[in-house]
Image (cartoon, rainbow, N blue to C red; front, side):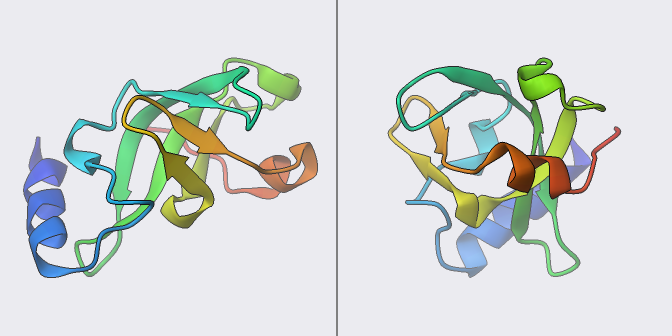
Length: 102
């Protein structure tokens, strides 16, 4: 996709974010709570004006009855273990994040 080209350039040009996660393949990766419960999955990598990954659009699958389900979560909020992203945010903090509609 068009965004992938920006993403590749950003990864080459800047420091790695969220423990060197490979954002090129971030879509559809599971997002879990610190105790391993599924919260949702990554739908899209969001790129800022400089071409760097700034947020991940996460579909929370009606987790905590968020409406709409998708939120733009800053990449710094995640940890990555090579298989999944862990997100340690309160329900209130998640609800306050900007909604994402693709």
